[in-house]
Length: 457
Image (cartoon, rainbow, N blue to C red):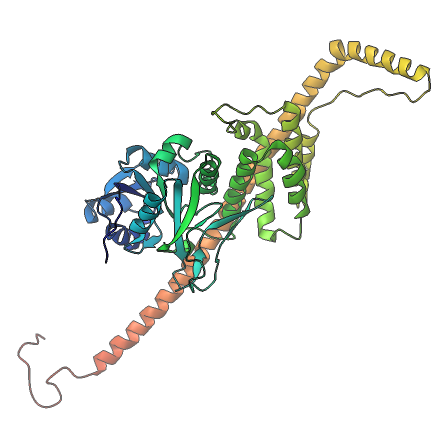
């Protein structure tokens, strides 16, 4: 293998783990086998309970282990590793990837060759064979729905050129530390999903290139890390998607492009299993809207100010989305209460010619006096009561929804365990039949009058 002609700086490979001992047994050998001259390997453990920590300490003492004691999510876990990593290049890895030996070197060479590259992703293949899972990410505007170049296409070399992309998947990529120091690490308000997309968009907004280097190849055991089409998957995915939209779109884009396009998807454009978690994501996002918008910044790092009336319009738009196709009366009630929680002053208008404007002004003056000293305090109390009622109902609904999602996830787990048990039972039956067949065969030396003294009876 020819040696690299460019200087390759020290690299840190951060592997994130949560109850993935079996996955690590496949991932870590490929990480440690990288043909890279100077690299450290760190494993961040997000509170595993499957024995990962003890096994790692025993099987891989050369790996630096960073136990967190609880699940910090992708962003929090990776940031924990980043804080102690020493490399100039930082590789972020899920525990369900298997790297080719030249994976890191290929990415590092591309970054070293172009000082504008801040993020470099790779080509990911499915474990089934030469089938592409990811050759760069595309984010569809205005819905912010992700897609991948080459998705489920046979790898025939059609995506073998380095190219700029919207984002790269967080399963396996390398970032320049200099860039991270300038734009910041992962935004930990993204607990699951879209934290990688957010980082890439911030990088591109700051003038860095986000590219895919297809010569760097890894296999992604994606099915092992997430139960697709499950309620919890949809809930986390859409929470991240809505947070991303509110962080990166202008208020005008949210109101004029995103919300109408999102409304147009209902119901035909959304899978039945996806609707309930999506409505819940709308409600939670509307409730947390002020906190989410506080993460918006202008050039120079200043917080971006948004007019309260605009924030309220966005909030009402989200609640109206949550009311679409509500399958249970309580959901429609909650959304209606939130949409009408705040009482608003009525504007008097008279259409009578000449004296009409005078009547209108008199009514407005009288309304101002009476509203300011009497009606407005009552309205404020009623608005507060409306909001409290809606919040109480939402909390009850959220608790019920959480229990339902847990039950569905448990059901999916039980189905998977039942399939595994069935397969194990079949293998045991085959082994039992084989043992019986072996028992029917005479031992060596038997059947011909001879005796073997080495066989103890």
